[in-house]
Amino acid sequence: MLASLPLALGLLLSILSGALGAPRPDVTAGQSIKMYKRSPRRNATEMGQWAKSHREMLMSKYGGSSSRKRSSGTNLITNQNDDSSYFGSIALGTPPVSYNVILDTGSSDLWVAGSDCLTGCNSVPTFNSAQSSSFTNESKAFSIQYGTGEAAGTLAKDTVQMAGFSVPNQVFAVCDEVSSGLLNSPVSGLMGLAWNTIASSGATPFWQTLAASNALDSPVMGFQLTRFMDDPNAETLEPGGAFNLGFVNQSLYTGSIDFQNIPSNQESWWILPMTSMTVQGNSVTLPTGTESYSAIDTGTTLIGGPSSAISAIFAQIPGSAPGTGNFEGYFTYPCDTQVNVSISFGGPLWSISPADFKLTQVSNSQCVGAFFEMTTGSSAPAWIVGDTFLKNVYSVFRYNPPSVGFAALSSTATAENDVNGAVPTPTIGSVVAVSATSTGSNRTSNAASPARSLSVLTAVVLASVFLGVSLL
Ligand SMILES: *[C@@H]1O[C@H](CO)[C@@H](O)[C@H](O)[C@H]1NC(C)=O
Ligand SMILES: *[C@@H]1O[C@H](CO)[C@@H](O)[C@H](O)[C@H]1NC(C)=O
Ligand SMILES: *[C@@H]1O[C@H](CO)[C@@H](O)[C@H](O)[C@H]1NC(C)=O
Ligand SMILES: *[C@@H]1O[C@H](CO)[C@@H](O)[C@H](O)[C@H]1NC(C)=O
Ligand SMILES: *[C@@H]1O[C@H](CO)[C@@H](O)[C@H](O)[C@H]1NC(C)=O
Image 1 (cartoon, protein in one colour):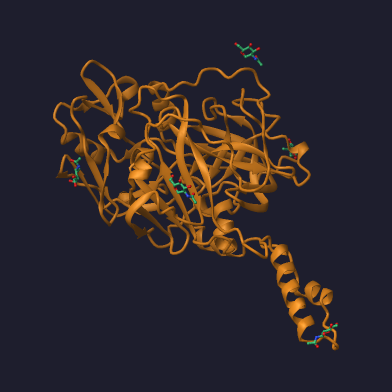
Image 2 (cartoon, rainbow, N blue to C red):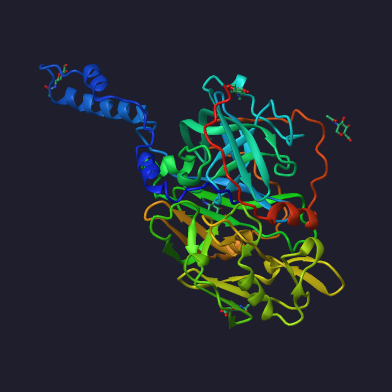
């Protein structure tokens, strides 16, 4: 999902330098020395024992363990409503309680619906801060606007766990007003996985705290996203693939990962310039310069871009026409055309499956394509490249050097498409967490509805975000 913060790019350097001073466990040298003050009478054996215990003590204080420091992990993803969204699970608080959150590389805030939620949280499991002994209320107003709606509440701090990692005092928002349709049960919130410069809260995101403090084996996040939109038997929830934190899973791709650096000083969204595109093998003329900037966004379903480029794509497809009514900004095309769009971000051309291009059928012969026309604000990228593309590659978001990489999916990964199965249970590593339960009534149907997916998930409206306004 795309959210915007005015001046975000300009604030980059000052805020980033703050991020590098990310929280570390509070252990002072003085404490350690005092505890293990050296006795002059120690012999070599005793020194050996001291050295071993000193190391173990420090490692356990820093959250590691003497035998093995946890430094990578996997969170299994769920695919919701025929590829409309992909969510994983986190645990919040003490004792930890797990919540499902959209994994969104297109924004940078973590928020969950709170138990005082007034609107938009019907039948959604909510966070009850009174039940967490580690919760701190920051009492600052929070609001964020996405293309698909808004969430508002107050900022707080608590322990957040995911994929075996734990960050104490992570800033997040407890929301009590959520736009209708933004949360579909069993999803309780959203975890932003872009850079701190566009965080409405101003806080360093969970992933970035881990990367900046060298807690990850490798400073990367990898995504494999499954496809179910071409499966008539798909259920509302299906296995969605994997989110790898701190490593890349070599079983999920073949060949090498082609990394492209994000433009210098543009650590905000995960931006790559879109350098070339072919449709049915023919080149399409694309805008250049900043008009080529694309947010690589797991939290957006489709692909939005400048209208000249979208028209040029459909000009390569005989029988296509601009959509009307609810499909304004989209194009229709003959359903029997297998459309092959391939995109390069400076490296290889990556092809989008015709199945992902075909969003929905609207008449006996006509289908709607997954690319739509979009105008973004001046500080936001001109393109938003969402799951329509990302289902076709293993994607890697790298902290340092700041870059995005793509690799071809392995047959192991593609074999997971369209395989109906049980959705993953919350995985937060070795820590036990119970799932929050819904306080509401039975959930209403949230079966895949193309019309709804379109209206809710794709119109991109960028709006200001208001920060730090105290409620008191
Ligand atoms: C070291 O001191 C311990 C007693 O504190 C003794 O049992 C041991 O034999 C000594 N080792 C050596 C190598 O002197
Ligand atoms: C945090 O405090 C504010 C008042 O400053 C209150 O309105 C809000 O409900 C509190 N949030 C939580 C989750 O306790
Ligand atoms: C890597 O992916 C394969 C295929 O999905 C899976 O079986 C395996 O458990 C994954 N490994 C890790 C460490 O996540
Ligand atoms: C799709 O287009 C690309 C680029 O022209 C080409 O390499 C690829 O083979 C095409 N795929 C299919 C299935 O035709
Ligand atoms: C949910 O629906 C079922 C069947 O329609 C009903 O038996 C049950 O009482 C409902 N639960 C709630 C909390 O409304």
